[in-house]
Length: 215
Image (cartoon, rainbow, N blue to C red; front, top):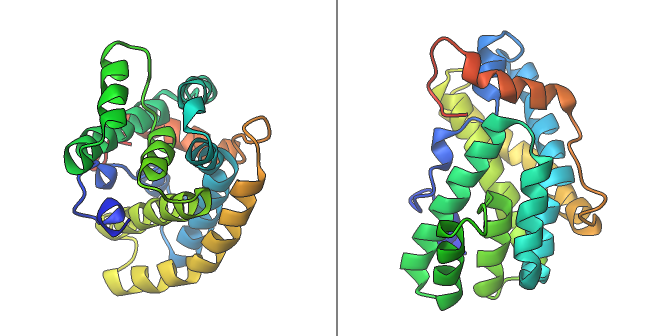
């Protein structure tokens, strides 16, 4: 698990800000207080939408294809949809080479044949299952990676400094732990986008005049 969630594991997560760059440029985020609000909303969105997919596939890897197609249909924002597929494919490619599991190679082939989209939460849950981790561990690791990515984006955008980011990440750990329990309790029929405003902000990223991040 440490190898999988290490920042050196190349899945391209640090190229994405999950809408923070757009929120920053539009003036919605620029202070510690507004960043804290953004992080809480983003965590809620992840807990109510993407994390249940991680949990479901970690429990039932045979459902990965159906979950992948459902996630694709529900992620209507083209910026978020593309970012999810890019990160998912990068995770799958790196995990295939790192762990040499035939199931991962088969999944890569399915993506090449356009049978799978390879969305990040689905691939994350699939990989964690193959590495013999529980659904709870998979969701906790997933939310940790998400939070770490948001904090990294905030530092690179100059909203906060590195030390303050570590303090805020520690403060958010409690919300992450609560979020794990919530995500595990939700079925795929119950999960959905919990913050339409955040989704709109993420969708505006492609209209920014200058961009540091891909999404």
